[in-house]
Image (cartoon, rainbow, N blue to C red; front, side, top):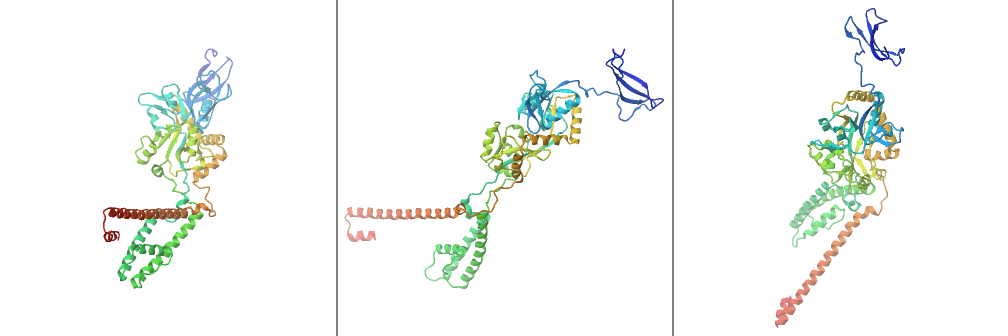
Length: 512
């Protein structure tokens, strides 16, 4: 009888209660088996379930090797798939009859593998490759991993998914990890040494100095003109006198009146303060390198001439509906460069930004296009571009979503999510690369050292001297040309008068 009904339910007397009954189940493989295990206890007097008891068996706990068709992409540290040979991996592959030839690792990868171990299901993966999250369009078409689940080619998809719009088409799981997207921008470059004489003062201060010089020149010229008798001094003398005062040079006074003395005295005092301030600033500029202003916020990056990009459009899908001007500009400046080598070459020019991710463990993860040879030319913005919580998606009404949500919470509570994340970083990101990212994250310049003066530091004064010499030479040639042109015109008029047979007196008067 028991061999015909191997899963028969019995009510037998309880050993601990005279009026209670225990519910047991017999799972027999042969008639004389006695493999019994307790399910629940029911009290007929109270007609209520006792704590930690259930009358309904969880049919999804043991799936008996049922296949779970899952879509994944390669994106470290969340998922990484590789073909390792038959019976060498932990998952089957689509369109293949070989068993366990795929090995999946990573935060999300380990999560779904352990879930299938717990529920006794067979994991069958469709690896879409790197950056192929895909999209689902309003007309029901699409591509990539997300569309495969929507089209029921797969029943589950996982790997760093955080798109809120997916809720319109698929079921979203509980949050697995916290993820932030930042932009690495070109590092602030050294200011050209040719403009060294201008660096001690900022543009606003230079404007104030210029206005002050103009006002002092006008006042000086008016006072000297009104106090002097006879021939009035030219404006050029007042200009050069003011410049001489502020350059700590001596001048020849035009008058000894009290107004002139007071003017010169206060000009000398202000000139000493201004020249000493400039000298101190110039000494600092000559010994410590000066850099252009760093980009710190999203607004700074939006106002900069730089563009940025990544291998997939998925990096900006969360921002396409942004309403702020800065975020709209950032989205407009995004370029999709799928080829890793092309993106690496673009970053090496130090005029292009790249999106990176700040992980749940507060570690940075970068793609293969950021390497030790170009990471030193980049630095991170202080402001996040956006953040979200990652999860997984499934077909509508997938019966395993609730057990999977429960497993996610248990994995997070036990620290497994951060453990798997750090394990992937140790495996795929070298210690040297992590050390190279420190200056980019801390925004420090490795070349900020006090150095001796070199020829580069005096290129500015040399450039000013070159400009002045060139300008003077050009004006001198114009003066010579103007003088030669006047002589030619004089000779031409002289010859013309000679042809008309004018008298010598008239000719002399004309030339005079």
